[in-house]
Image 1 (cartoon, one colour):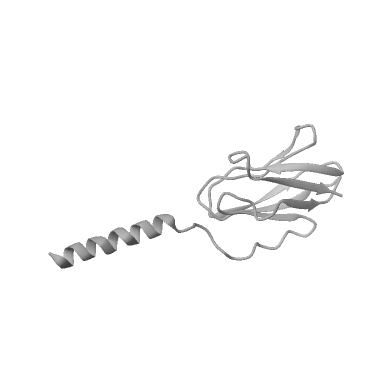
Image 2: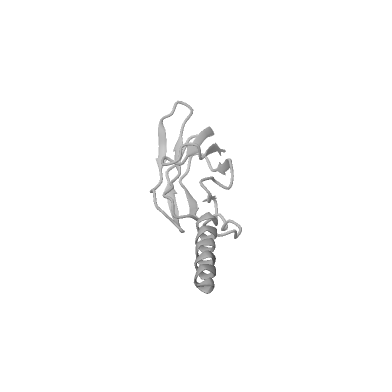
Length: 124
């Protein structure tokens, strides 16, 4: 009886620990495509609050989602007009978005599923 109780306690503790462990990789972000940018999502947050991208020409944005929750990257101009919407997907996984030319200046980006995940895009 004692063994069964100890085994049950050990199993319960292991399950609780597994449920509280963060998901995803602690690895450094991947390298940005030439002339493009990179951003990673983990623990319902982006790894950076600023992106620098080229203005007036298309570029690639490598987006790595390191958790099971769905995320994407959408870029808006100052007035809230959508400039680009990236595919929403659950991870772990990555997508290389083909972003059309955006005008020079400061814009905003965010995850449409989790709007608190946001930042600034500087196109220059």
